[in-house]
Image (tube, rainbow over all chains, first blue to last red; front, side, top):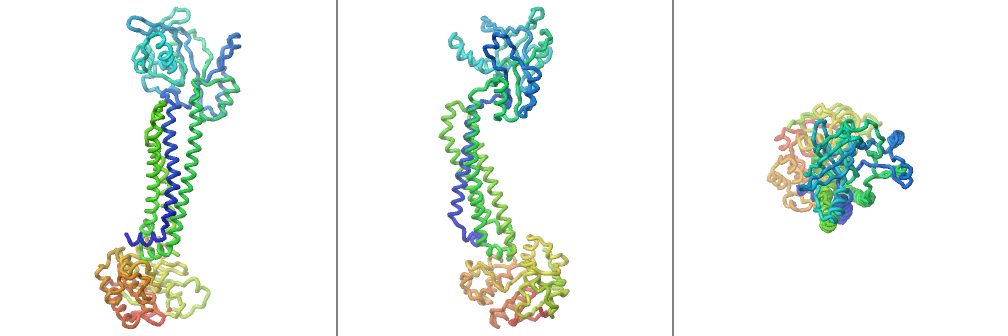
Length: 395
Length: 217
């Protein structure tokens, strides 16, 4: 209805609407860009470990030179575990269980077998996230799934293979090679022969992991029956960034396994992103108020017209529509500009990030953030417009 | 479309009149029913509250005591949406202040109302403009029209919708006798065609119409 628009949009101030579009554009662009950059860059530090949740910490006691002399076993006593469990940031703990027998592993290499002594550890299954993918062992199975530390493969590929003139091997290849496992009790009286298969590599577990059920069964079959205190613990923490965690570990002489500098860089990235997003959000909220005030002022100026149209029998919805149109149009324009800019910015940095080894998070997060905020801005303003129209029903 | 058959006033009184003596009014503080199909002329001295009465019935104001019902439904209980429906389907109103939009032309002002319901054809509206002698001002901005011309345009606008009750608040206060008669004949024929009631007020220059019931406010 053109006449209605002409009447109700009288007194519209283009500069105020432009002011909103610019400020909203800046706020949304910062948020969309920040979210997008965080999504793209975070993979640099948080190389996804599909086996262990990043909220889990693996801790052990620090080994010092004195320990070597006095033969002090760096194990955790029941009291120490109990004390750890009582910390507010601990959701649960699990013990690393070690083999109580000897392990010889053989890799067939075209006639030239390679043999090595090995060890296994296990953690409670609830801490292993790959539980579905062939993880598990039942008595009678001939094959044992194994997860090894990615560091071992790196050591082999870039340390050993190069110097020994051996070919480098990929993760997929390792998964395809069966591992001959000879297990024997300490006295050599009981023996088992099984096949191991590497089902995955972990960044965070510095060990050779087998399923808990296998560990229990094999220790029962081959072990001395004596229960050993664990030397490592896995902890499910509720607030991974909490400084209390670091303080506690420090005070108790504990260290976190697999704690690469990446975690502090990732923490820094999170803090910086947080600050950037907060600034963006502040600007966005302020721009929301600019729009609300401009529309409110416009409606106030046109209050008489609004009232007269309602007196003629126009529905409140029909009278509100021209103002809702301004809101949707201006917010939509700011959103398109902001998301467009964020994605354009991404084109400039994504090449550099990928060069550093980041696996981009796709362009969706930045757009989703921009669109979601725009929907909120439109909803808040539309509600304000409707309230104001109803207020003009009776002068 | 459901038709509105009666508007009933029970002890109705503008709040500003509360505390004043009973007076001689045949409307205020009485029980009174306006019925569809009849013609009412409400005569009053200035300040007796005729515009208030129209505003109460049209829902523009609610500062009254007593009750006002539309076919038994209390006006005080109507939602905004229900009022807006009444204003489109049952109640037509020509306020004392024509209330035209000065920035729109005479025709656009009429069109604004006519297009809302489509009850009256554009050609019919043009015919009324011609009959009332405002057709040559058709494309003039309403703000450029004389008060009498504005009143005639506003009258045509109020007829451009379906109605059961036509409220006319001093409809001919700025018209001469010839235009008064023309307006009266259009109003009467439209009201008859729609089997609607006419409630007109006056303070001395009454619409020249044969009223079924005359009331002193």
